[in-house]
Structure formats: C-alpha cells, structure tokens
Amino acid sequence: MTRIIRCICLSATLCTIASVAQIASTQTTQNPDVAYVYVSNTLSGATNEVHAYAAAANGRLTPVSGSPFPADVTSMAVNGKYLFGSNTDGLYVDAYWIEADGALRYAASNNIVQYNSNACGSSGPIFFDHTGATLYDMEFRSDCANNTYESFTVEKPTGDLQNLGNSSPNDWLYLPASFIGNNVYAYSASCLGDMYWGIYGFKRSSSGLLTEVSITAAPPTPPTGYFYCPSQAAADPTNHVAISMQPVDQLNFSPDRAAQLAAYTADAAGNLTTTNTSASMPKTLVGTVNNLNMAPSGKLLAVGGTAGLQVFHFNGSRPVTHYTGLLTTAGIDQMFWDKANHLYAISRSAGKLLVFTITPTSFKPAPGSPYTISAPRDMSVQPLPVY
Image 1 (cartoon, one colour):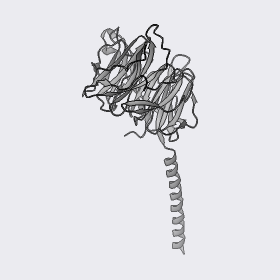
Image 2 (tube, rainbow, N blue to C red; image 1 turned 135 degrees about the vertical axis):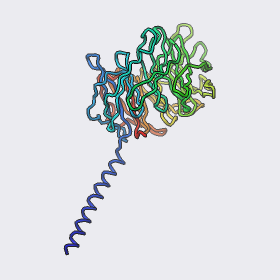
Image 3 (cartoon, rainbow, N blue to C red; image 1 turned 180 degrees about the vertical axis):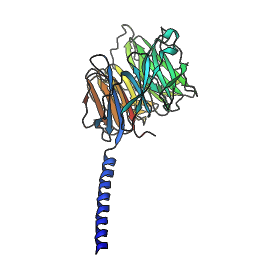
Image 4 (cartoon, one colour; image 1 turned 180 degrees about the horizontal axis):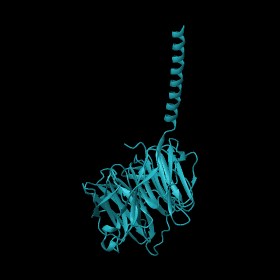
C-alpha cells in the first residue's frame, strides 16, 4: 500500500512539474523578447539619459529594470555586447555593457578627439560595420574645417576603442554610411541647402579602416527644369542601395515636388548604377526625407520625414514600389528594424517612440504604440538573440 501511495504522489508531482514546464514553455514561445530598444532622452538640464525597453514578439515594449540609465549620450550604436554613445560634450564615445536583461552598465570612456590635428572636432553619428568589430564616428570638423569618418577597433573585453585612422576630409559628410552585404563598400549621400549634393563611396580594409574612394554614381535624369538632390542612403543585404532624390527647381532652388526613391546596384569596384527613371521612381508623402532604413530582408524600405513615415517595397535593382500610405503624420527623425518584422521610429517634435509590425503583406501598429518620451534624441535597436 505504501509503495502505491508513493507512486501516486510521484506521478502527481511529475504531472505538476510537466504542467508548469509546459505553461512556461508556451509563454516563452508566445512572448519572447526579440530586441532591446534604446532611446537617448534630453532632460531639462540638457543632460541626457537612456530609456531601455524589451520588445516582445508582438512588438509591445516593456521598460528594462533600472531604466532610464544615466548615460549622457546622443548618437548610439550597438554590436551585441556594447552600446556605444557619443557623449554630449562631443569629445568622448562611452561604452556600456549590455546585460542579459538589456540593462546598461558603464564600461569605458574613449577620448576620440585626441587623434585629430589641433584637437579639433566633435563626435557625431556613430555606426558599425556588419560584424560589429569596427566602430565608425562621423566627426564634425575633425581637421578644424572638414568632416570625416574616424575608424576604431573595438576591444571586446573592455569596450576601449583603438584608432585606425580616418576616411579623409569631406566637408559635406554629416550622416552615417550604410554597408552593402559584402561589408566592404559603404555609401552616404548629402543634399545641402537644396543646392549642393553628393553620393559618396567608402571602402573598408581588412583592418576595418574606412576610406573614401572615387566612384561613379549619377542621379537618374530629372524632370525638365529640375535637378535631383540625393539626401539619404540605405543598403540592402546584397549589392543594392536605395537613395532618396529630392527634385529641386533649377531657377529658384525650390524643392517644390515630392521626394522620390532610386535603387542603385553596386559593382565589384563600388560604382553605383541605376536604370530607374523619374517616371518609374515612386514619390513619397513624408515631406523632407530625414532617414532611410532597410529591413534586414532587403525587401522593405522605411522612409521617415518631416510629414510622417512610409514603407515601400524594395526590389533590388528594379524600381522601388509603393506599399503603405503614411503610417503616422508625426515628423520622423530616425528608424530601425529588428529581425522579427518590427519597425521602431522616434519623433522628436511629437515626443514619441512608435512601433509597427510590418511584413511584405501586412502592417499594423504594435500593441501599446506610441510611447511618450519627453525629448527623444537618438535611438538604437539590438535584435535578439545575440550570438
């Protein structure tokens, strides 16, 4: 009799354990974290902090324990192990460990201006190559007159940065560059005052050093009486680059038509060519384009601007095609995708963080979106899992 009772109790215990395990497994499967989202926010005293969120599979955001974190940074970039941020003083790039739960822990501070002549320059937007091994800083007035990309090797155990050199002076650079799939060539575009423009190519060496290279990259033929002013660039996972084209009146330099989107193909030498025409390139509804961001699949292109946010189908070398209308009419300054079909965007003017679930066949706001942040400055998204 005793043996039977023990067997019954053991069976009941095992059933309970199995039931709890099944519930936990189901919860994990249904609602795992798919990304950590970091937003720098400016406080009233002009000091910044970083708000951290864990994004669930449905896109809902939950504040990470300890958030907001006392990180006085503006532009940010993540590589799976660290979050790097340009300090508000413009002199340092700080490194923070990304803990297993998404929390940030201070690791190192790197003086990046010390490598410039006459100690000129200030840190601007920062970004990584595809491997996360090399950090690039778009430094303003690095030689006291021009801008450049400074290259730094990341010391994985400490978060320290080792300087590799710069890409050469270019006073028109002001945005991060975007790498195509080979992680060798990267591209940036600029449109200054709707008068001066450039499309720039950069080559990454085996050491990680990024240098500017001479490339051909002509805009498509514009409408009669206009010229195209390229302003933003975003590369796909292969060898294509999306570039926004603002039509500008040749007589009065007025950008009085909607921005359009061109698709380019990079050859083995980094040159960009396009077969797109003014008639085949889609027009946007976003006003002045502030940011382009390519989905990891390379099939969707997010376009943010002063009048809102749109997503387009990206088709390699073929013309970009319309997909959504305006997903919001709030001015959008920056966007990032995770690897679970979520698009995150910040609006400085509206004080909002917006999240959308978007696939090539459907789109909708994520639960809980938008989120209020008083003065969002910059954003970075760390997809999970990290390998």
